[in-house]
Image 1 (cartoon, rainbow over the protein chains, first blue to last red):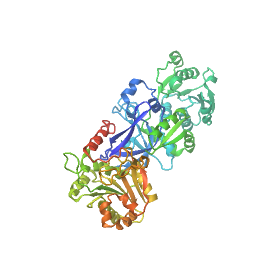
Image 2 (spheres, one colour):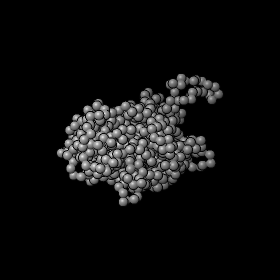
Image 3 (spheres, rainbow over the protein chains, first blue to last red):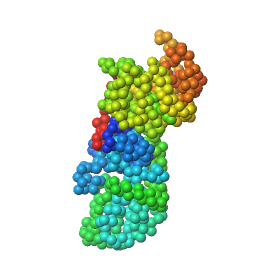
Image 4 (cartoon, rainbow over the protein chains, first blue to last red):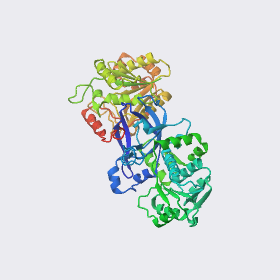
Length: 340
Length: 240
């Protein structure tokens, strides 16, 4: 069956491609993406903010790795036509010693493989997770994003020492918001302080215990652990502030993506015996856990709705460009109602 | 019920050296007609896919069914008629046998337009439900010139008002029967387009937006373009 793909061929330019989606083969099912959510990583490709050599080697490529949709056809009958599913962007590599999301031969959509800006695609059964019909599709579209927060907090529980009275979360974007919500859901006793820049965005964090702007953080040890959700040019300053304000043997979870290398005050890391742990991509079990939280914790689900800054109807190519333009100025997530 | 009717009654090749009907030629290692059938089978709004095929090619089509759709109970093959409307009529008879409900809708589609999208099919179903009959079109880019005798221009319609007809063409089965049975033998001989029949009998045919890529593979040139459009080496690379 011939299906459409919308691929970025160079920054700001998307073209239509066609590919053959074969219905045969019992190891696969056919899925139609219905709601897509734009991530910062997609925007870096779209607006040409990646290194020229990276763009040259990876484009043309269909963008977007956060999506939910419907099963159109499952030859095994495990899923019914019309079942709602979240689509997983990671195609795990073979070395099972490592977690599926960090294997060197794993392939991630909208990075080294085509993303979900497609009419339909063929996925393995383990590349989808179903969810209840009554959950809001707009929120489910960024389950991948939520699962990264779940993954970070779950890993944090495994690597950090057990004194978790006070945690600092750096960042005022959607990732910081998700991490705060997951922490509130999974570690309700912990005091959470958010440290950000934009007072308007920080207003959304009204459920945490303390909100500070970066200039109002005193240089004293007060946090047991920290989550870095800043990324980009602000990463260095944020990490530096974390090192200054962490109590001994605390853990810093690094989640923000930076295009440039970030200098780290290793002297103080050594002196305090800190642990720095990187977490960016989630695995299947994090998706399952994220959906479980969305299905069982109405407070968490209610907070996730505030992450939708805009929903854009996409009926044609112009609408795709409008959605990316909208994402440029949105506080948080832009969701595409994918009807193309 | 919502039926898809795939019109594969033709036997013309017009395709250079190929001697089998063009709907059976391969694109990306799959018969063109199979690409078409796939789209209607996976569309959750379609209950049954009925293929109207020329009797001489019935066995060939049955072999395609056996090869690609052995597990699919949504697909039915019927012998086509002597012309396009005859094939539609044969498909309509089959819908009556399967359902016969007054609200039944038939979405007809050329077997040689494999680039049809889910969106076009959905919009056809919606428009047929709402307006009774609809046609998929794209705005004409070339100026359309009308000549009654093939020698001189009779008329040049305003380009802004001209469109090129594609498929799907969709309609209420009940309405089709009413229109088809009221056509005289002479009318049936001259009117080759289903939507034209509806117009002749006073029905408004609603327009649905098609796409330039929803091309009809008629000539070797079209076939070549379709093959080039499918040159996508990344097909399925990461899904295995």
